[in-house]
Amino acid sequence: MIRIATWNVNSIRQRLEHLLKWLKDASPDVVCLQEIKCVDEAFPREPIEAMGYTVVTHGQKTFNGVALLSRLPFDETKPRLAGDDEDVQARFFEGVVPLKRGVLRIGCLYLPNGNPPDTEKYPYKLKWMSRLTAYAKERLANEETFVLAGDFNVIPDARDVYDARAWMGDALFLPQTRERFQALLNLGMTDAVRATTDAAGQYTFWDYQAGGWAKNNGIRIDHLLLSPQASDRLANAGIDKHLRGWEKASDHVPVWVDLDLEAA
Image 1: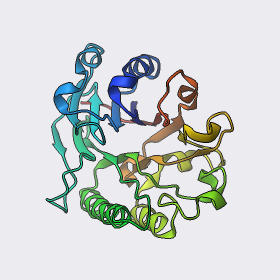
Image 2: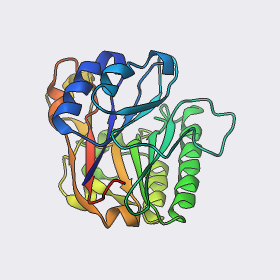
Image 3: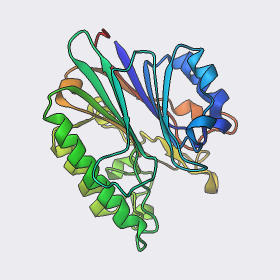
Image 4: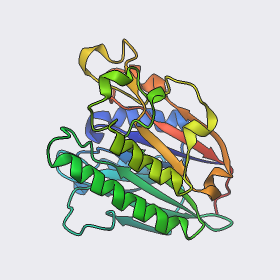
């Protein structure tokens, strides 16, 4: 069994102790981190490596940034999402780990927020989503065990938000945003959490403002999407909601899947 997790830590240096505790408790094999908010040289890799993880980062000063942690060896790693050579934002990292049969390919992503929608930020988000769909289509053609994991900044459905009416004009919930997300699923990707439960209230983010956590005013924007070869091996999926209650917590919590796979 291989556990793959995604977590927007909202600054690795502020959340390092939380990460180390969670790694010890949850024991994931591969972790996709977003919003590490530091350059590669400043990433606190030593205590994570001491726990048996290989660490690769694609950082950026003070904002964005993604990282992959793996207890399995990487065959290859590659930063940046194809499709726009002028895009310098650190939002994507791909890693490949060998299996006894084939490989496990993981795309770690931090999709643009897109707010306010009436600025250049929203077209950037939509273009980024189109690039992601093109990437996923290309990878799916290889018929590999493939997982797209990260902070998608997409609320897929009214079940995934505490009050849909309050989010109607937000870039995370606009029809175009949800349509682009559905286009990914239509390629043959499976939303791991929704494959295991139809229940409402499966939130992964609670805003720091207006008592979001205390009121359980949450949204589900952190996702793991599985190729057919990965979804065939889906054993379980979950959200580690309790971390949001930790002192000085990230506003996101980890989401994970267990896939019935054997490492090489």
